[in-house]
Length: 265
Image: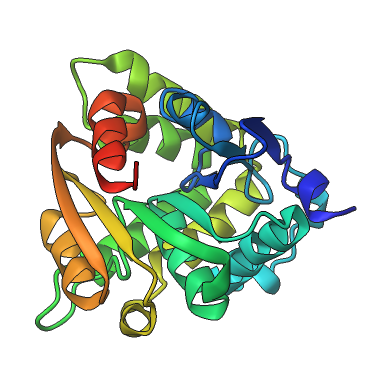
């Protein structure tokens, strides 16, 4: 099975235009971009895909060794781009896919024109002089709870991640998305995500990047976004007047506007 079939790759928009690739976060699938991606179809070839184990991907191809680090997911992105033969692309990565995009751009910079990193975090765990948003004990408890009761964890955590108690429908949608993912794969992906440390990779990436941060985000606090901006050499920083970790669902107009203002006309 080639990369396009394995990752349920879908293309739309203008075939003769620059390519924009959208990558979803943990527990989600390409449907999470439905309010943002279509806004660029008039000016770009828009490409959506699912990480292995999510959405319409081939979960049977999940390899626990390959995906024990974010490098395995970055290799998938490179394989998709090589198969598409699309030339330098604009890569839009949400949450953990922001770091996946950073790693892919570090390994194959010629494949990337720009990065748009939505809610990025290179390290979720606090250390001396660095605030990731969680203590080691909190991450350990999170992963243990997922192991014990993944569906219950999803129902409790998803609305908190969404951060919009005034929009319970959004929290319910994220819960449903989490629950559609194979629990065994989700637990492994969570470990890879929340235990990763990609801070040292940031200075090696010269690809121009836009960092998009919500003013309140329990997964990637403002300090994390600013850290990425300060350590990613060719980066710009935009803070949305929005809350939660998923502005692609909760504030799509703001996210789209920030992207349009950043990208060349």
